[in-house]
Length: 74
Image (cartoon, rainbow, N blue to C red; front, side, top):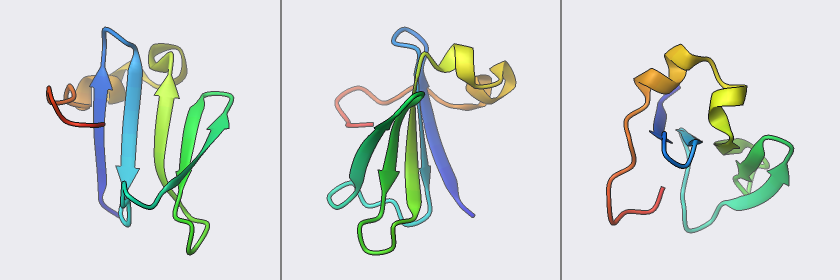
């Protein structure tokens, strides 16, 4: 499985996108840790957004995630 991700340390938000992620069609639902993004056709989770990521995710994972690019949507 391919996983793409970003971490904005200043905002303390991490984004993880999985195979099949299509930003124009995902349906987001709020969960206790942030957002879960679903493929509407299959109901599969294709993305996760973690708010207060440093309190939820392991520091080693956050260090592996690159910062988001300026001018592009997460």
